[in-house]
Amino acid sequence: MRNISLGRYLPNNTLIHRLDPRLKFISLIIMMSMVFFRFPSVGMNFIYYGILFIVLLILMRIGKIRIKSLFKQLKALWFMMIFLLIVNLFTYRVADQNELFAIGKFIVYDAPIYQTFYIFIRLLLMVSLTMILTSTTRPLDLTSAIEWFMYPLKLIKFPVHQIAMTLSLALRFIPLLLDETGRIMNAQESRGVDFKGGRFSEKIRAIVSLMVPLFVTAFTLSEDLSFAMEARGYDPSAKRTRYRVMKFRLRDLFSFIFILACLTGSILLLVFHVDFAPFIIDLFNLIKGLFK
Amino acid sequence: MAVKFKHVNFTYSPKSPFEHDALFDINLEIDKNSFTAVIGHTGSGKSTLIQHINALLLPTNGVVNVNETLITPIRFRKYRRYLEKTIKNKKKTNEQKEIARNLLDEINNFNPYKKKKLRSEVGIVFQFPEYQLFEETVLKDVSFGPRNFGKTKEEAINLAKEALNRVGIDETYYERSPFELSGGEKRRVAIAGILAMKPSILILDEPTAGLDPLSSLKMMELFFEIYRQGITIILVTHDMNHVLNYSTHVIVMRDGKVERKTTPRELFADLKGEDVISLPPLYKFMHDLVDRGCPLKIDKINNEKDLARAIKGLKGNA
Image 1 (cartoon, chains in turn yellow, cyan):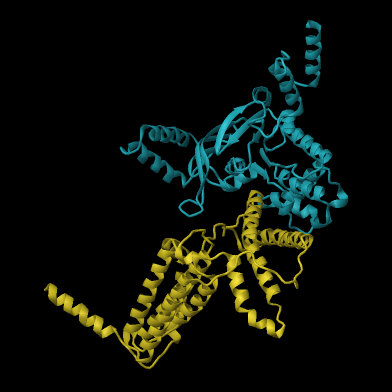
Image 2 (cartoon, rainbow over the protein chains, first blue to last red; image 1 turned 90 degrees about the horizontal axis):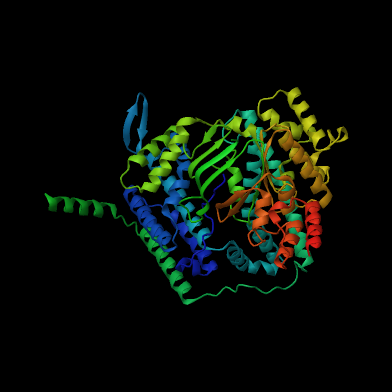
């Protein structure tokens, strides 16, 4: 709990860091929707996800994000996947599935296994995509981007600025509360609380001894903050200028074209039912033949 | 020996972008029944140092010996094997082997620590301890510590009452919510929560920060009283007056290293304020006098009376 590093902003100066946050936000949404494309053949699905994964690794490389850190955090996913696999084995049925093997009367088909794998890889891809966004974009830039996207809502008198301010304040509080959590955990552990082991009733008490002071601190902090803002004349409805002005540059344009090209490419593959799998198998056999 | 650090290094979040070395090769002994002050600038590693004493932080390398039990970076036996390998490894320098040998010595003579026992023996009062209050009533909150260390309800409540009495919180407060108390009262209740555990080593991280001078003085008197009853006290502070008036030893930390360990009088007699945050007024005055050509022997003077006598003597000579 104490060193949550997944998706934390890593100050760096890479190409991805310098991109416009609005572009990064849009790209995230486009790439996330691409994750959900599904091809009719199993082989093609695997190839498609493989390609997406490679693109992702390249992006992480460019953004100087350690790939190892991602896998470390995903250890928890394994448990979920095994659970899901068991559920899928019993419940997931489609028309074209092949029998793999049988345990007594229970027949294990291949479709549920593929299905579980798809879910796993989709989760992995989505988590890593979001991680790329949040570790290369300052939280404040991200909220500015969100505010920009919500701009049309101002026409229907939606309090866009207030919402954005609330969002950025909430984001600002995350590291503060994490620090505070660490501090309170230290104090309670010194009083004999065991946050790792213990019986169920002890665990409940441990959590209460953490949550109550955390809430109290959160309220104190937010009260202090609101006083500080008021003391500096903050008025939620006033017109405001920005410290950091977002600019759409040439590199943003090229990145956007690249992302759109990827999207179009995938859609075309999908629409025309392209299947690389037999081709790859042929290629594989050809190479194998060459070596014989 | 209450606490002994041997070749302790500590790194925050190692192998991550936030990696940060906080302690470098700390070798330190803190005597039983001593009142040790730890001073140094912000970020010099004071808080990191004290969190090693009850195993909230484990050393990245080296061992900490607390009440004759050892805190090791990894599991005891694994660490012993690691050290034995280090000694045999030809690639390591002689210096590294010497350190490993020293540590192995320590490991062969002592047993590993037990977390619960250690935590009950070492009480830490963190900075602004009032943030750790959470129970519905003052009495319940103070008895929380003893209860965690396996005391029965009655025993815990008795310990709590005794501790509250010590910090000057009377019976009328027992059933009140800790959240409706004033800042100073909250602080005292939180400190009682640690005292109720009956630790043999009491660690205080700036316990008087944010208190008014009178409450601060009272608080220090309380700690001094506890020290006189035979409890080892380690005090992290920026207040040089507290260092001078109460401590028997002082440790000066700088950039994650122990710069010196000495007695407060020696420290203030030697330094002229460039290394510590500020000199106590008595020593500032004496150094100023010496700077202006007054032949005082600072190390012979212990308090204002001595100083007055010394100055009087000087006048006679002139």
